Image 1 (tube, helix red, strand yellow):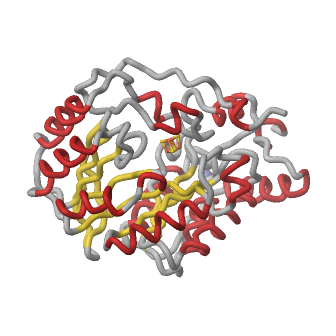
Image 2: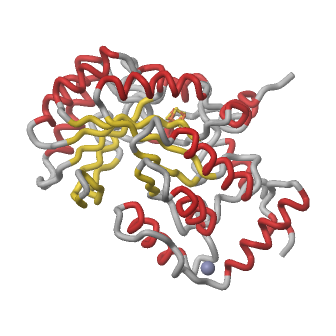
Image 3: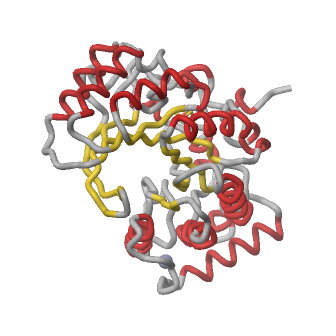
Length: 338
Ligand code: SF4
Ligand SMILES: [Zn+2]
């Protein structure tokens, strides 16, 4: 019998980006010690996530940014270039399209060199990793360079059925719990990414899963960052989307999730990538800008709710919630019933 992994499109690892060119680098706002500050975000071009090379998550197209020829010295050059940018940021976010603590992706000596280069300039470092690479040694390395370390784990959902049969995450909730404990015991802070609307779920099921997942981890994590799915190239999600069998979440759903979680103990944030566009979380394309601004303000602690948001498309969203529940189907209703 075929498993989910048999339907994941074959990964074509891109060689477009030069080995010493980072994928992207920008300055954005984030919160530190209750204040809004600048954060430097660097996406390093690595040889790719080990899990993506083996199989990969159904919504993840980060492999498009990788280059299998990247070596450790190239990562150091990329980081040096990123650090040449204007200064003044308090937070450094290092993203790798995989796991910063995976020694196949970022060799241990390179990881240390990168941290050492950055330690003078930033108050806090943030990086993403899968749970299997979290241990006292890898965390100890980071904490020896930075007093404030935030580890970001991409859990996506606490529901093992979804992790296995919808997301193909390659680990279970229990693996996340173990890594989360190690992070907290080390003294580092923990951010957890939850996905809004993995494939095969109705809009209502997706909202419920996100809210339930946040509630289940509220005593474990310091920050919950909701990532509404955006349709990335070469993924199973893209294949479903092209066939009308998947629609990214409505921004109405995103604000409902945030609103339902706003009183939980972790800080609740969301920075939807591709938001307002057809591949990202969107409503009617008229109100996207207003919703995204409200979501950003909420995430930075500048607003408490979304009660003032209005648009005629709310009725369409409510109809979809009803109709999907009635038909028990996760297809893109509006595409079929226009
Ligand atoms: S979502 Fe993370 S773990 Fe999954 S394939 Fe992408 S980079 Fe790897
Ligand atoms: Zn609208």
